[in-house]
Image (cartoon, rainbow, N blue to C red; front, side, top):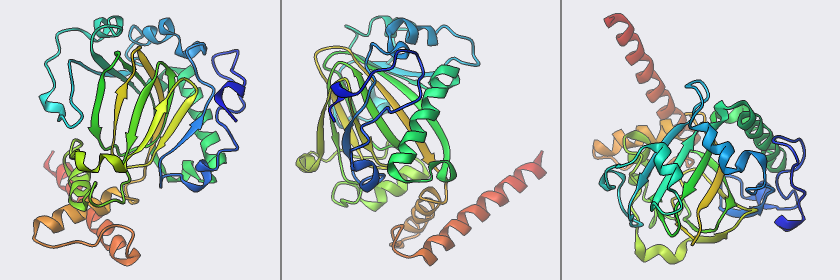
Length: 302
């Protein structure tokens, strides 16, 4: 089914189908491999019109999203701390997005009840299509709206969320790499990411031809599994994307990778997650015990 054949909603939040239910990627590639799919969201949807999204920046602190933004010419492999200094407010950056060489992320838009209901409904549909018990596995969930100036690059990075990214306006090219390809994503990089550095992913241009590449247009989305590195090139118009994502509970990956990070610093070559349930469980227990001791010590020191 193509995006054009999916009925678009008439109200801000509707019950029904948001995604192409015939797409086997949901069931067979969920949190394993990147895949593209069709969805109903375009800028004609009431929640994705500019005036409605601009209101998010003016709402009270209880519902206002957390805005992350920057401006300037960015390279694919550039680290975040080397980005140009901000010269405009978040509101000015939003209003100048057409020409500002800017990128903006509105995090936690689900604080607004309408977006929150939409996030819940979308994740419920992902759960049905994938056959996964998302509610029992997830630690947290989030809805994000991205705004990108024409021709702007979003640098290579790794995320800890299981993500479904949907293009609402404009076009962009996304490049997604396989986290199991250890030439592209060495274990030490993932360990550093989970232990201390959200910007630990290092772009390796010699492996660019291994990327899953998708040309995203309104009505097209991609699934980005946890820890699959990716970078994006926006098209000639302003790009607007909607992301629904969630983090798994810490025992699934975080605790094991953190344990491996410390073991590697001690000169060991730790076993990657997923190769031995017994070893993974021992590492999880060690990390959880250490965190519990830290909390006890902190309470007693007050």
